[in-house]
Image 1 (cartoon, helix red, strand yellow):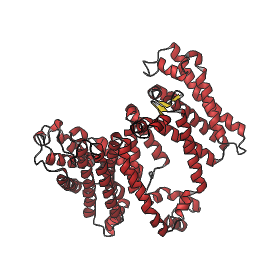
Image 2: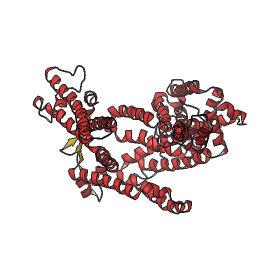
Image 3: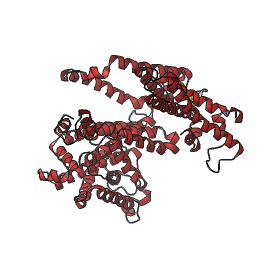
Length: 553
C-alpha cells in the first residue's frame, strides 16, 4: 500500500503540504499512517491466534509488518538510484527519494525500514492499552489529520477577524503549528474520554419523551445560530461548498422518493435538474435567449411544475419496466435531454453549447451586503433543503409513502393488496422530478448561467451514490451522504487529481463494511441485519422464532 501511494504520486503531491509545520508533511503522514494500520492489523491477527495475548508477540508482530512496509520503500530508493523508473511511474524521481529518506539520499535508505518498524511496534503495543483509551487516541489522531487538511480553510478567515492571534498560534502558513497539533490531540482525546465517562449516549436514550421535547428547542436554536453565522466566519468559499451540498440534498431527497422508497432506479435524474435550470434561465435571463425576463422567484414555480411534467412524461412509457431494464431506460432519457440541450437543433431556443447566461440572482443586493455572492445561495439552499426535507418526511410516513415502500418490496403483492401501481409510480416520478427541478433552478441562480456541459451522467451517479451511501429511504442519511460525497471532495479541491481515487476507495469500503448506509431507515437496517438477529436468537430462518425476531426488529 505504501509503495502504491508513492508510485501514483499521492505522497509527492501531499508532500507539498505540511501537517505539522517543519516537522511532518501530509505525504509523510500518509506513509506513517499506512505502517501504523498494517502493524495494527498484523497485531490483531497475532492476538487472534494467541489466546494468552503475550505482549512481546503482539509488539513483534506489528514490528515485522511495519518493517516489511518500510522495506518496500527502501528497495524503491535503492532501485531508483541505479535505474530510472520515471518511464514506468512518473513520480519515481529524486524528489520522492529525498522525501522518503529525509533528504539523505541512498545513505538514508535504512530510514523507511526503521520508521516502519517503529510505527508497527507502536501499533502492536497499542493493543495492550484499554479499549477506551485506544479509541480515544484514534479519535485524537483522526482530529489531527482532519484539522491539518483544513488548516488553510480555517486560517484565512481567522486572520481577517478578531481571532488573528489565535489563528497564528494554531496554524502556520502551511499546516498546523506544533502547539496547535498538541492542543488538537489533547482536546479530541480528552473530549472522547469525557463523553464516554459521562456515557452521554445512554443518558440521552434514557430521557423521557417530555424531557426530549423540552431539550429539543434549545438544541435547535444553537444549531440554527451556528448555521447562520458560519458563512460570515468562514468566508465565501465555504458558503459556496455548503450551497452545493444543499443542492445535492434537494436532488437526493427527490431520488430518495423514487429509489429509496419506491425502489425505482433512475439513472437519468439529471434530466429533471436540467429542466429546472433551463426553465429558470429562459424565463429570467436578460441575454439573448431570455424570453420573459421575469424575477427569479416568479420563475421557480414554473421550473418545478415543468420538471414534474417531464417526470410524468418519463414515467408513463416505463411503468411496466423493472430492475436493470428500468435503469437503462432512465439512463437513455437523461442522455436524450443532455444531447438535445447542446445540439444545433435546439440552439435557437436553448443556446446550444453557448448556453443561457445573465440569469439574475434570487435577491438583488448591494455588493457589500451580507447576502451578496455565495452567502445568498447558502441561505436560500439551506431554506429550500429544510422545507423539502420536511415535505419528504411527511410523505414518507403518509399513506402514499407506505404504498411506495410496498412497491419497493414486491410490486405484485402491493397490487394484490390494492395499491394502484400506475398512480403511485407516477406520483413518485413526478415528486422526485419536482425536487430535482427546484435544485436545478437554484443552481442556475448560483452560477448565473446554464450550459449543456453541466448536464452530465456524473450528476445522476452522484445523486444515486448519496442515496445509497446515506441509507435508502432515510432523510438524515441523504443529508449525511451529501456532506461526505459532495462537501468533503469540494473542500479538497487542491488535491483534485486524486479526489475520485479517494472517492472510489471510500465507496468500496462503505459497501463492504456498512452496506445499509451511514444512517439507514429502520426497515433497511432490519433487512440488512436480519440474518444476524436470527443467528443471535439461535433459530434457523423460516422458523417461528425467526419470524418473532423479524417482528421485533
